[in-house]
Length: 197
Image (tube, rainbow, N blue to C red; front, side):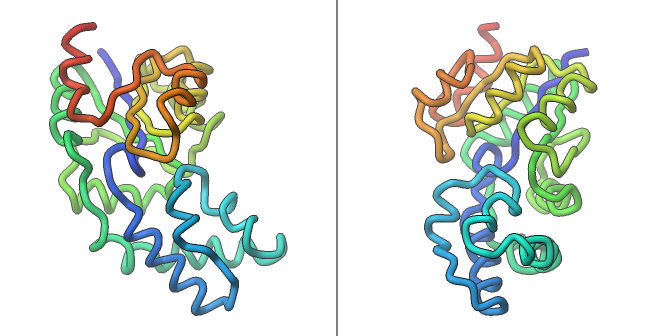
């Protein structure tokens, strides 16, 4: 069976408004000086990585936990599906299973899947770079679709074909350099790419 993996943020969904709203709430609660525009311009890594830029190391676990606690109530209504996401998942689903591998907290990722009606067979959360590669290997995925250079590194490391979409923070050149076998302008082009394989 063919197994296709997908990233979530800025691959399947535009989570920038939701994530920015959660960070704005953290600013209110913590008093930290967080540039939320900058945060959402470079989505991809886990929340702990981002908080390292704004908080003392000893405070990061507390505020990362708080972020995950308030995320569902604040972010969920503000997040939308990116163009072509449903069609890309349907195309992958016709030839096998679809799995979601994301740095986002698993329960939050599942809420997005359910809320937006994404045709995902299984969700794997809290996975980043090497963690994504490990899930891809364990699941026997042949393709991983993502928007970040670390997604393409995970695909390359696992032996899967990396398909990049340039809907996230990384340029086409960066994605190719990281190992993308194909760089698509959006998921709208994915079914045609899949048909040509």
